[in-house]
Image (cartoon, rainbow, N blue to C red; front, side, top):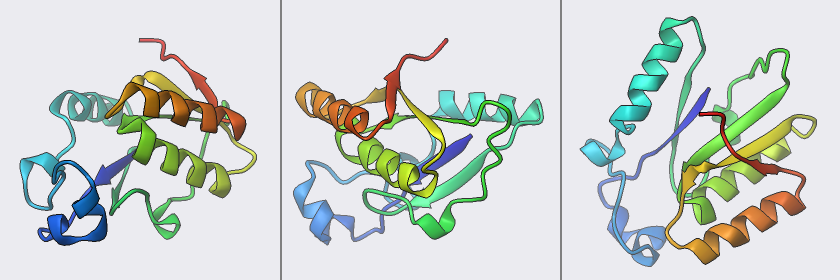
Length: 140
């Protein structure tokens, strides 16, 4: 499991991105930069069963490709994605990961995504589908 943690500097509101988003969020050293407690519980349980979880800090909209570990995708050879802010963060990172792993099937789980606005989210799903990224549902 690859966890991208959105972490912004304390002066985020003064940055170009910070001035253009509606609210400062995920500021380093604040609870807003922590993984959601329910998700953290699931990650801890997955680790306890021997699973690998890579936590990567992400500044601004996307991760740094140099921070992406050599993922061992196992037998499925698939990469599943979900996240917050579908129309900005999820689409940016899905496209970047698709570039890093061009021969890997990627599936964005729409029921594990959240967006700032529904129209923007549908546009993001459209872009991802156009780039051969599957948009599906999880098997909760």
